[in-house]
Amino acid sequence: MQSTWNRVDQYFKARLLGRDSIQEQTLKTNAQAALPPIDVSALQGQFLYMLVKMMSAENVLEIGTLGGYSTIWMARALPENGRLISIEISDKNASIARENIHRAGLDSKVEVRVGRALEVLEQLRTEQNRLFDFIFIDADKANTANYFRQALGLSRLGTVIVVDNVVRRGEIIESRIDDPSCQGVRELFDFLEDKKTICSTAIQTVGIKGHDGFLMARIEGDDEELG
Ligand code: DHB
Ligand code: MG
Image (cartoon, rainbow, N blue to C red; front, side, top):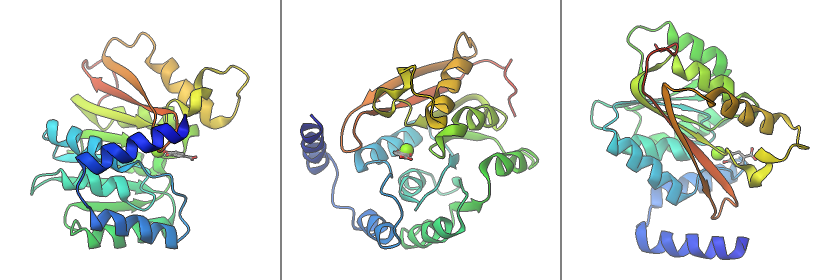
């Protein structure tokens, strides 16, 4: 099955996406630096681009930069005055990401902040008027629920939060799997259960990233701890 998923993804990519020499170079740079190839796919990147566009988002937050591949997809969708902050724990990854972001001509729109995401998120909360329209969570999975709860404090009514890798080949529903990554994602679903103020869905995906999925949440009420 995986080979069919791959070939269909290749077909979609060939038909729907043009050549993207900048992002090809991003992936090449990341591979040369031995970053793990766990970026979103190009088709998923275009999906994120379209979500940012559809929301007319001006302030975007990303948790987990890696080499900046998804960062570049989202930042490209921003208007002239738009800004994206991306949080990355590794100094090395951050400097590779900055190089890629520079090559993409997005220096003026993107800031990569290095640090433990829970600490950087706390720091962002102390900054005045720092609320985000769109938030993409794609960092260490064990902390997924913690990042989501923190992200609420940086959200307003209408903010959309997208979380990557919520299926993990179906591990999410296997009770015997007690690894921290699965538990972190499950904790998020437990948190969202019966939350009437957050409209959520989760969509499974197959493709070059295997069997996985996104969660999407929209903040619709203010009894959460909003920013
Ligand atoms: C892994 C992380 C990701 O963000 C992803 O999209 C796929 C895999 C991982 O840590 O294995
Ligand atoms: Mg991911």
